[in-house]
Image (tube, rainbow, N blue to C red; front, side, top):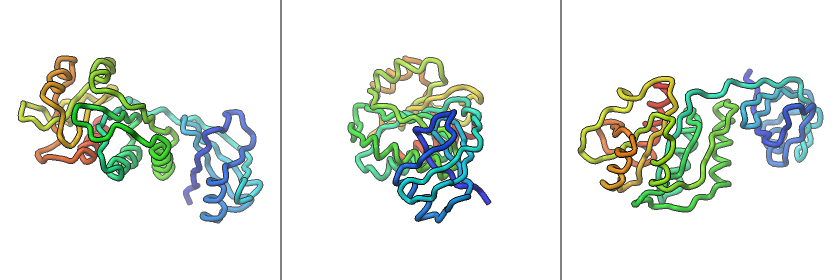
Length: 235
C-alpha cells in the first residue's frame, strides 16, 4: 500500500516532530481516517521526503514524529514553460495541474501584446500546484514565477534551449525533432490570438527557434500541455 503524502512547507530538515496545519490535519485524520501509529510521508516542496509516524491524531493539530529524511534527486534538465494566461481561469488552472503532474519545473505567466489576462491569483494557483505535486507523488514543487513581459523574457534565459510556438505559416520544425535531450529548455506559448509578427521576429532575433506542436490549431492551454508532454519525453 502506497503511503499518503502531505505538504509541510515549514518543516526543518533537522526536525524530529512536526505539527500539521488545521487543513492538512483535517484531511489526514477526518477525511482519510488516519490515526495514531500510522506512517505517512511529508513533502516540503524542496525535494525532501520525510517518513513520519502519527503520534497525536488530533484533527486540528495532527502531530507526527520524523523517523527519516531522504533528499530526492532534483529534476534535470530544467523544463520551463512561459505561457500567456487565458481569460477563462479554469482553463489555465487545468494546465497548471497537468503540467505539474507531468514534471514541468517552472511556469512563467507571460504578458504579450494579445494576452487576455494580466492579473493572477497567486495563492489559488499555488494551491493547485501543491495539490498536483502531492497527487503525483512528487517532492519538488514547481516554481510559479511572477508575470513577465514578452520583451523581458526573450532577453533572458540564454543558458537554455529556447523555442517559440506560433501559428504563422513560416517554416517551423516539430518540437520533438529539434529539442535536444539533457539540456535546460524553455518554450513560449502565446495567447488565443497568437503572438504578433513583431513579437515572433523579436524572439527569432534573440535566438529562439520556431517550433510546431502538431498539424492542428491548438488552444493556449492545449498547446502548453502538448509542449509539456514532448519536453518531458525528450528530456
